[in-house]
Image 1: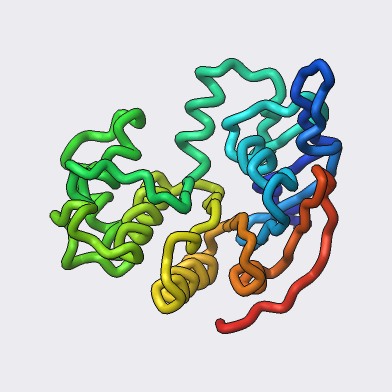
Image 2 (image 1 turned 60 degrees about the vertical axis):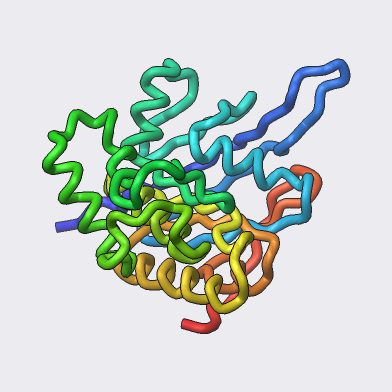
Length: 235
């Protein structure tokens, strides 16, 4: 029996974004890109190159002005804002450079909040948040406030929050940008482990060392996306 090919997590078909003028400003030129299930892709480019625009489109934060974006085979073109929000919350986990944790909430409560709009019972939210924190090595820090956590621990909480909804895509924006070298390496090792467990990861970075952790690297410069290969290191 012939098995059907797996559906890509990300499929860009001539996707581009131009901000209206005058004059119009092309932020991302029309491009094609496919990210398969279980792939670890890194995106590199200088400041102002279009990396953030790519992230906003892939993360359903912005809509392209041209082309078609399929997420898990779902055509996101022209969908309602409400449906876009639901799709984003259920299928994409975000990890940001600045962590974006609520300082007055414990690590476990911060992770629980990712499930507030999924109609998951409170007791189940609590158990899933605990399991996600254990998975990233924070069993001993469940009730700690972010102000009592190191930078590496705060990023691990952010990763747990991104994972707890079991998303199709883990989308990372400069995940080690605020960390020292040793702490950054521990976070990269965690991402390697998650990828080994089957996670699909797209990481945006300006750091060549971070980029080299991916299976494949895409470069963006002046809004133009180009493909290149890179060998993984440090795994």
